[in-house]
Length: 148
Image (tube, rainbow, N blue to C red):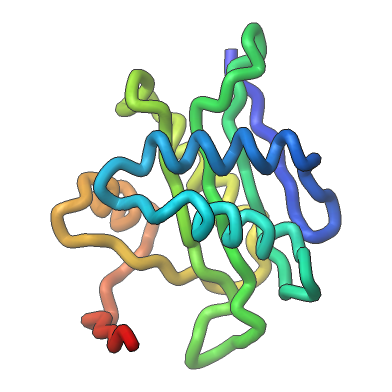
């Protein structure tokens, strides 16, 4: 059985939980992931650490083992209107439980709990793209980045 835990700038995760969430995302984001320090920074940002705007971290936990089976990280942007109030930074489900509805449950809970609009970046070949579209996300722009 799966339970959903929610953390935010108002209800922080413990240091141990932050580490478990970071490790889980690092191990399960596959080719769509980032270095572990970047993932931890996004989780810390959602907790409102270092005077950041905060956000949400929602996890799916297996009740018998307390093992993380899914996680989503949403950061507040501090903006509204032309830039959505939130950006979905990471979402992943455990490699052995994909296709069982955990990602959909996490996305639905994220949409329900986030205050304001949500943006996300998705690689065209990411299979999760179809879930995002079913939930109402649309592709408005081609993202371009300049790395310095």
